[in-house]
Structure formats: structure tokens, C-alpha cells
Length: 274
Image (cartoon, rainbow, N blue to C red; front, side, top):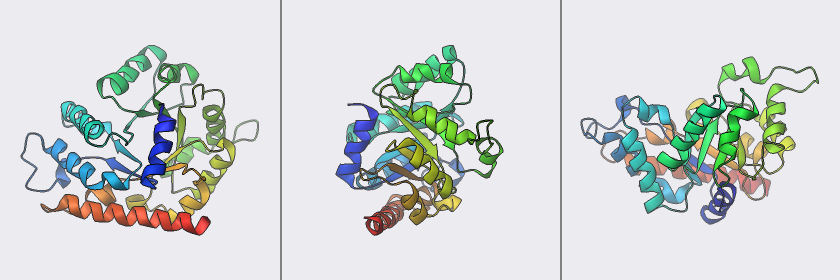
């Protein structure tokens, strides 16, 4: 089963488009965990266990682990998700982008060392910089397209000589000639629903990872209206609004309530469209 099939199965089984991002900030961990040597793992694993039935995917952000010398805890976390919640895809959010030889090592890191099911990558060095990931036919490649940050417009919204926007050109490549094994997806921010709708019109039913709701202010109704498909189509990510909904010893329970509210809000939006 490849990443696309894995994700579609999860959409069906969980009836959820919610992806929970795992961004462990040591300054925001509950006080009773902060001094523990495995605090990052314990915090993230508790969030995972509390929300697993509500999500279509988990998305650990690699920088939060690397900055804390917690790579071993990231390995343990992904192993925990695979062992305890085997139906849930794990997306390693690393936004890699480098020449082919280096990309081969990044692919080994993501897929062999960390055993991620998918990886986020940057397309702006072209095809040869993403080919090593494409060679891993059963793993997902989630390519930056129209990101949720305001500065994304500096490049992604530029008009090319043929009249297309740069993000539109990326969408066409990723859904077309680069999608050799049907493993590709795109990152498109909830903060730009018109562009999200445009990308959906270009790529058909290609999966879209959508950051930007919650702390970044993206609108769930507009996101679902712009990008949902009959099968699901979206991995709508929320990180901080769920992770740090509570700060006491009951943080995981409070996070579950926040995730449940987000999942249900997405479902209501889907029902309006159906």
C-alpha cells in the first residue's frame, strides 16, 4: 500500500480530515514534564494517544526535535505511532530541498531512519532535487505550493511569462509529470482559500496538506469549500491550537477536546457541501 492508498483508507475509516501537527516547544510543555529527559516524547505521545481516533494523519515538525537534540525521541515517537496506531500516516515536516546526492541522504533520513510515511519538500531546485524521493514509490512526497505564511506571496504568486502564477506551475508539475507513482501531494495554506480553490481545479483529486487554521487564522468553512473532494482530499493541519490548549497535568485530555471540536467543525463544513 502506498501513501495515497494509506491516506484514503484513513479518510474512510476515521471520517476525519484533521491532521495534528506535533511541534514540541520546551517553553510550552506542562511544568510536570519539563525536567524529564524524555519530556518531548512523553508530551507528543500523550497527544497522539489522546487524539488518534480523531485524525487522518500526524505531522511531526523535525526542527523542534533537532533543536533539542531529541532525534532519538522523534524516532521513538514515530515508532510509537506505527505500533500503537498503525492505520495513521506519519508526515515528517522537514521541507527538504537540495541537489540530488544530498536529497538521497535526506530520503534515507526520512524513510529509513525515521520511518515516516511522507515527507514535505521544497520544489524550487527542480526535478533532480526531488527525484530521490520519487524513487521511494510507497512513500508520500508533499511539495510546497502556496504556503500559509504572508511572505509566500513574494515568490509563489509571481506571474510567469506564460501568464501563470508560479504556484500554479508547481501544482501542474507535481500533479502531472512528477507524479510518477501516484504518491504526490501539495502544501496549500488555508489562509489563501481562493488560491486553494485554484490549485484544486488544476490537480483534480490530488491530496492537499493544508496548514493555517487555528493559530494562523485560516477559516475551516472556506478551506473545505475550496479544497475538499468526495474521498476527502484534505489533510487540514492544526498544531499549536491543539497541542497547547491546556498546560496542566490534564493537557492531553484538553488537547483531545480541542481536536474533537476542530474535527467536528470540519465535518459540519463537509455536510453543508454534501
